Image (tube, rainbow, N blue to C red; front, top):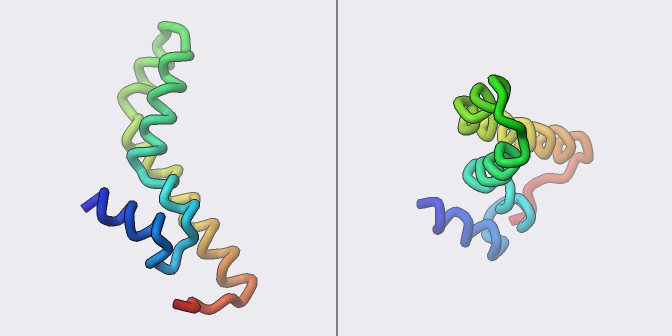
Length: 80
């Protein structure tokens, strides 16, 4: 399902712009996993590692919320 959803977004067949395909939860997870490797070995890193998927979903939700708010504020209806 994820590859199909990514394909639909990249091909422009959804109401979201093509760049939104890169805001997938798994893409954000990979970026945060890379950040984890940059952290020193402390208790913060352990807690950061334990919450990676939750943090990824929170960031994804924030991106989607910001897009919807900006989209509605500009008054752009869905044109597809």
